Image (cartoon, rainbow, N blue to C red; front, top):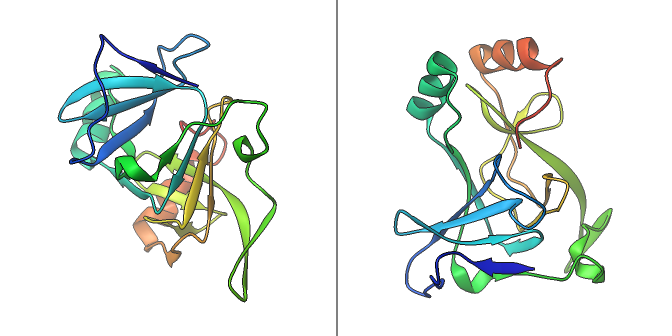
Length: 167
């Protein structure tokens, strides 16, 4: 389900930034930003070919001040967004997805401050073939790009392992 914000609409020309709305009620789990403005809120989003980006400077500012500010985003072209009803089969990520002759496991993707988006215990990601943003505030990805964390990122991740992920 998608709800326009202040009568704004998503235009085709510019990428959108989707982030978890920490102030949201039941219909404001995910916020969709375009051109610097929030244009909509949604509870379920399925995105083809999303990127994962975060601002290290804003992450550091949040850590220093304690004031929560969006700084981790799923980036996508508007034409790649779908908003299935919560009861639709497309609303939940499949455990396994095949594309051509290749099988891909759907994996949980976390955002960890100071590290970025991670898959598993020690792999970073910045792209997926498909992503599901679900009403429980979780992000799942299929066909994620995966690369090793450096020592500093791995140490930061280890210190956060006991805390609840923010994405």
